[in-house]
Amino acid sequence: MREKEVYKDPLFELFTSLKTNLLSEEICVVIGYSFGDEHIRNIFFDAAKRNLEIKYL
Image 1: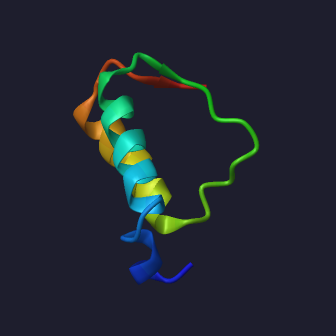
Image 2: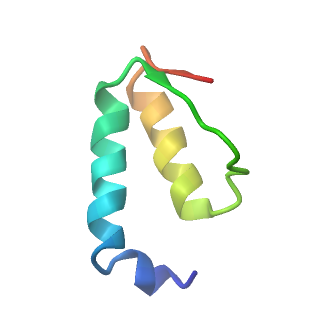
């Protein structure tokens, strides 16, 4: 996916919601995702750095 497409709705709104929710959750279950997309991987890594309570399963 081109980087410009990430900043268009509805993707931008969905990624913003994902980032916000990861900062307030304690557990995140990820099923069947390889984290191959850098922009999505960065959302999860940033949340892990900022939310020390979250556990990824």
